[in-house]
Length: 118
Image (cartoon, rainbow, N blue to C red; front, top):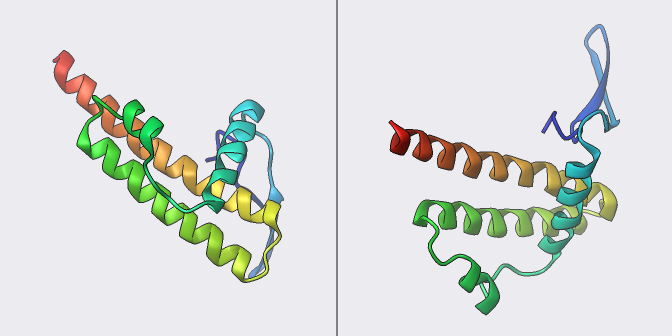
């Protein structure tokens, strides 16, 4: 998340902590792509024909993480907009969490490839 710059800036003085806008110090291309992907979570999660076709041959563990991401991020988007949050702030929050799911899939697959290589 820090690599993408999708972390909030922080101002501290004594025991007072104030959080600001995202830092934008990371990879701008990654931040833009994840932000665009986060807009899709305003729709209800489902696995249609095209997505099902794309998922053929993937490990079940990866599919489970992807489904968990779809349901969790959609509910997070709905809750934040339901509370009256600005849509752009909601998308950044959902995108930041999406990066966590991407990281989880990447580490699981990398560990699997390392086991196969050994």
